Image (cartoon, rainbow, N blue to C red):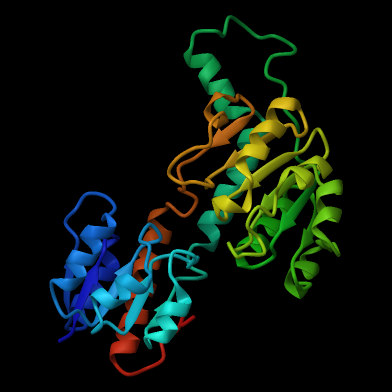
Length: 319
């Protein structure tokens, strides 16, 4: 029997799978994110063999050194920018993630945000609840239709590909950029662009689906925002720092672009000053993958990664 520490309560499906495999699973009892000190103290408390971390946990050299007995950290997320991969390799620690299982949830949320900002749904909801609706008006809260518009995708992995499929079903044109052309997306009927700038100039909606890397941080800066159509909308369900939010707030205020819809934020959980004051922004609290189906599948996949490693096998999602 191996000891496994889970940094926060997650779907019981994965916890049960670990326990059914004969392991001793200790789940943090704190109702919230462990502080750095709390995380280190918790890891030092027992000679754990594995750690199941969340994207809100910053896992670096000091954290690895707090639990030298744990040679696997299974991240409950697709992204892994919260983990120092270099420090893990230096210590012989295996890192895994949970790709694929939240593709549908995130893609659907991205498209929900696209609909919400295009048809001004949250703004209409606020207007109605505030008692401002006094009857039908011909020019009230005018939005834009999707059919025939161009959706620009930055990133053409699993999630970007599913967003493309949905968009094409709604009669949109899809133009995408990635570091490599994607045959599966091409086969759907999307068109490949040679550069990010080409996508930005042509798109009526831009949806971001890239990982957070040094090369993608502030991918959308003031210069790139200025390339977009004044009637265009920006949607982000990837990672917050991909957008320079100060530049975005300025662009939304001065009409450089029409609107934005964000599920992730540059300084998460803090919001850049000005975002909440703007009517042409839709904000959701990093909930793109928040469906029961996705959460259950993520926990099961994280558990499978740990079980495989502890059985001496290569985890299915080793980074």
